[in-house]
Length: 107
Image 1 (spheres, rainbow, N blue to C red):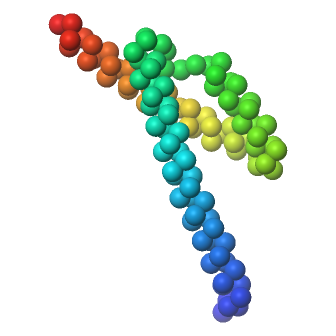
Image 2 (image 1 turned 180 degrees about the horizontal axis):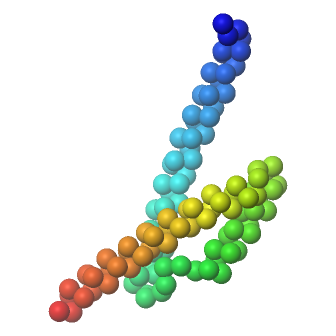
Image 3 (image 1 turned 90 degrees about the horizontal axis):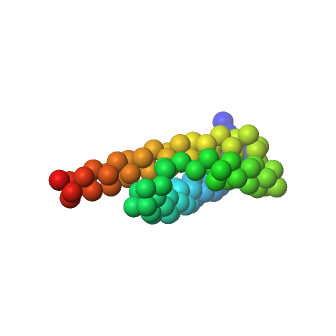
């Protein structure tokens, strides 16, 4: 049987984790709203979906932030690489949609 005090403490930690997870989802949604706007801007000006120099800068910046926050920088880099991959995929889709709609207008 679990001690009631331990059970209470565990529930409090889990509630905090649930709140943080909810905040992360909302923060990621806002980030993807911004990156969608970037994707549209890139597509309308025929810019490539990926920007390796920006990606490298962001990875290095987040590694430093992670270190300062006592978070494993390798984990932060893996997480950011996953996000970057998704952003590029979205930018490619936006560019394809934009290119397709422009071709329809010129046909």
